[in-house]
Length: 271
Length: 222
Ligand SMILES: Nc1ncnc2c1ncn2[C@@H]1O[C@H](COP(=O)(O)OP(=O)(O)OP(=O)(O)O)[C@@H](O)[C@H]1O
Ligand SMILES: [Mg+2]
Image (cartoon, rainbow over all chains, first blue to last red; front, side, top):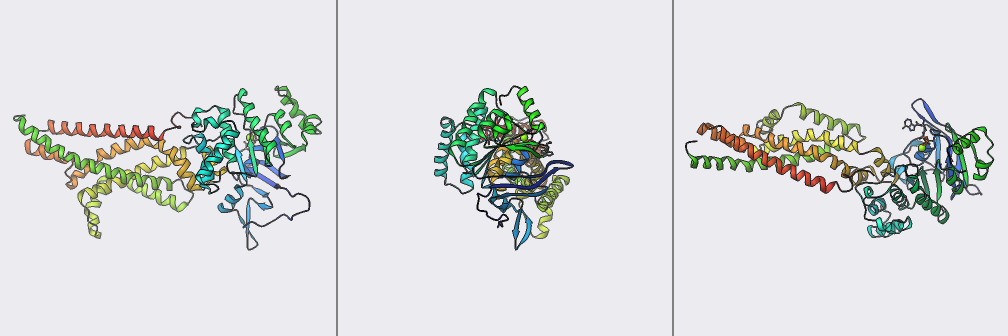
């Protein structure tokens, strides 16, 4: 069982906290004494140059990466440690599985199961994890496919779908487990430009219609601005600047943020 | 070929060996498949012990010849109280040996299913075994099938060694006819054709399986 390591305060306590998180791959330090927290229901955009550690942050939350030092705390429970008889142990697989149930993740390259149809991709996990019966999962799965505009593609295999359609199936698949926190890692960067909008529209709807906490890593500054309540600008595993999108995009304080945005604008993006 | 009638009679006699060959092939392949799956999967698991045991098994059975294994099954096992019929001994030796070769095929195919797929199963909160059974293996099997087809044909060709422990399979029957009639060409031509026919039947079966399991996968792209 996890121990509550964060005392509950009167104000809304964070759903995610990074506490002095450090991550190294061999000798390369990717995240450096990283601290930030996310409030329930918040829509966070993580931006920054390539290699700044954005993906690593999402992967840590999805337990695909472990911390080198520090702690990631979700709903007051450590993701990396568990406590038995007041002693600290590395998180067991059982602990990780419990923690994972709060998260859903959509990957840059969709990672759909090629041997399963769209609807089977969506229903597999809720049935296997015991969340829903087969019939319930099917019903809910079809609703989700409908919601992402793919009701008519339920029985297609991924190989017969366009990139945008695949990514929408992947979103429906992540939603099928009813996550409280949705992690989106550059979900449109593998798509042809004309397919980007259909995927972003789905995300916009989710943003407006659900109370899910959402963490979005993106290179689409225009979308980040519309989507986010708060933007974190990363460089070399550290937060350089954070704030509401209006401030970050229009009156950034740091020279690094300014130069990053200049480069982005020079590359033809609207900000 | 002095006597056509006699040739037909011998021909038929040789073909009666086909049944034993088929039995040896089918059962040996079944044993080999199970062993290959179990040891191949074991070699991809995190447990050091599992990997070590599987690795030992594979190295042992690939490193000692199938002849030795066959003789051990037929002549040595009785010494510890296990007496097998010639066919049983043949199936055991060919199956254990084939399984050791198949093990590598299974391991390689499982590892060839991308990290992306594994990470998706973690993000969907499946257990390791659920991921293996529902996501990894169904894709890996498609990759295994061509090699398994080849392995099955190797096993079929290998069934001839069972003639050494008196199983009256094709090769054994042909040898008998040859030693009694002195005619070499016809008996061996006949078994060659029979082996070929069996092999092509097996290949068609594998191709059918590839179609059956390849849905959504063989046209690639996730
Ligand atoms: N498994 C790994 N092994 C070694 N280095 C890694 C590994 N994963 C990430 N890195 C390194 O960590 C750094 C941060 O990677 P990360 O993917 O988090 O960056 P990012 O901000 O998402 O970049 P991008 O915008 O290009 O996606 C990079 O320098 C990357 O090369
Ligand atoms: Mg990234």
